[in-house]
Amino acid sequence: MARANTVCAVPGCPRPTHARGFCREHSALSDKHQRETVPTKILGARSQEKRRRADAVEQWRQRFGNICPGYGRPPHPATDLTAQHSHALVLGGDADQPLTVLCRSCNSRHGLESRNRQRDRRLVGVGETP
Image 1 (cartoon, rainbow, N blue to C red):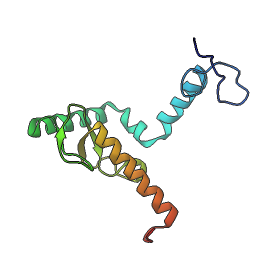
Image 2: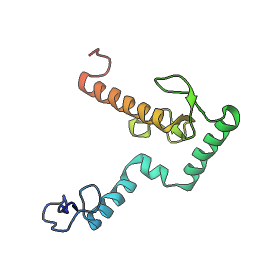
Image 3: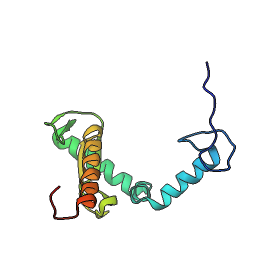
Image 4: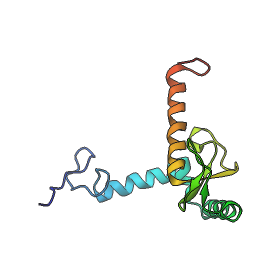
């Protein structure tokens, strides 16, 4: 049985949802806002940055093959290698910093731990121990 559509999450909008709880119009507005304001989305949209990331992954593959150096786990075979900033842009990293290469899973793990550390610093205060 087909699932019933829900209405858009924007108060007063009666249209059915399309993506992430928004109708097509509000989903497009949300995406536009993200592309204009989120540092990683702004930088990621530039073809120069995409090329720099692709080059970093290609250089890694030429030197080490399809091996992820691992993050929180030992090095392992991986074909889904990605380039990332060592210090996340949203946490104050510089856009021109050198890139590191991890597989998608380790990249996600690194991002999650970075965000958790940042959250813990805000909750406890820098320099204090939890």
